[in-house]
Length: 99
Image (cartoon, rainbow, N blue to C red; front, side):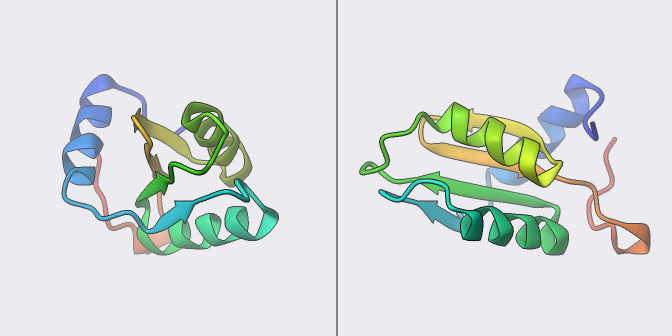
């Protein structure tokens, strides 16, 4: 979708290292409200990190794939219980310039 090369993915991973998780997904797993909130956060920030808590029984990779599909974003990486999503900003509000 937005990420076309491994160089771009590596660049986004380096930016994501400094980020704190914006959301935590817990026992209730994914709800429509969480999906909507993630969509809004992507519109505001372009790159976000999400933490999947220990009490969530769903696989973080499945959660990431679902969120990527529903929010029309790219899954940059899933490491352990951390998910990083990227969606290019609209118009002139772009904050991140991919190499």
